[in-house]
Structures are given as structure tokens and as C-alpha cells.
Image (cartoon, rainbow, N blue to C red):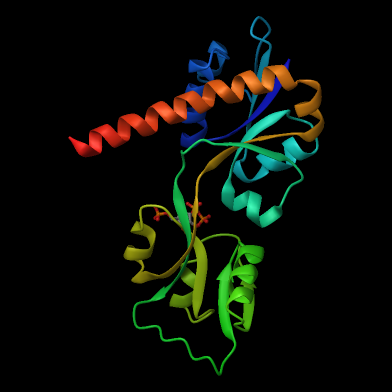
Length: 218
Ligand code: PRP
């Protein structure tokens, strides 16, 4: 049996479709109810719906053998897991954002609001820039508007949250996407099944990329 932690929400549904197309389906997951665990004994899979930011914890501690987590979470919490595949889904970017008229004053400590403290510290350490981190858990965009911080480090997907709050991207730190991750001992003991699954998901990613490239050309 392979235990799989999926991120609850729209991304998780897309990811489940990939597992299904890879031959690891579990039809009961499509029933509308509040259940969190779905098992298909015949296929040897069990899926759990997990809060996206918790997937890596389940996998690191072995409650799930594999799972799908955003690169942002992997960089921020550095869980001790194997990263097997870039699923090329849930694409967004980690960015520094602030008011459009923001000008950095290097003589002052920069106040940075974020829930991605490690990513922000690493970024500014690379620039040798002194910062004061203000750790928030959500609605980060409020911080520069209310004068709580100078800038924010946050995820930008469509850019509409920034736009609707009169903020702009000042700098892109790195691109983010969903990754297939594995528990280290599960990868050893369930190696054949995990490798088969990873290869089939990888084929789907490559096909999708080819189709997107063809569509972009025509
Ligand atoms: C995330 C992120 C931004 C928003 C970006 O927030 O923190 O606020 O999405 O998306 P956009 O570029 O498509 O507008 P989330 O919805 O996770 O809520 P949060 O405020 O609790 O972080």
C-alpha cells in the first residue's frame, strides 16, 4: 500500500487527476463528503487530503509515503524528504513587493513582512542587506499599506492581490511549483512502486509541456 498526502483544494484535485491517469486511481475520492482518507485496496493506494502547508510534515514523519508540496514550503521548512519530480503545476513566484514608489534606503534596516522567514532571510543575506523580519500568517499585503513594513516577501500567482492593494512586484526571488516528495525510508522499502508512479507522472508532465509548446506556436 502506498500512502499519499495530497494538498486540499484546486491544486490537489489536479494532482489527483494525474495519479488517476497514472493508473493509481481511487474513485471514492470523487464522492462529495467530508472524508479525509480514501483507499483503493485493489490498486494499493490510500489518499489523504491534507492542508497544503502540512503535506511535507506527513511525508517527513512517514505518516504518508509520498505527497505533493509547493517548492515554497520545501525551501522554507527544509523537510528531510526526497524531492522526486517537478509536477509543473501550481506555478507562481516568490517575490518582494511593495508600493510602486518604494525606494530602498540602504542606511536604514529594511522592514520585511512575510510568512516565509527563511526564504526572505536567505534572499537578503545574499544581498548583504540588513532586515527586520515581521512574521505574519496571512494577508501579508496589509503590512506595507498600514506602515507595518516597508516591503513584503510573498507568493504572487496572478498578481491580482497586489494590484487590488496598489502594490507592485519589486523583485522576483524564485519560481515556485508543486513537487512530488517521498519519505526517505518509504522510498527504500516501496521503491519499485514509487519509481513506477514517478515515471508515469513524469511522462504526463513532459506530454503536457509538449502540448503547451505546440499550442503556443500555433
Ligand atoms: C496567497 C499569497 C497572496 C495571494 C497571491 O495568499 O499570500 O496573498 O495568494 O495570489 P494572486 O497573485 O493570484 O493574487 P493566500 O490566498 O494563500 O492567503 P493568505 O493571505 O492567507 O496568505
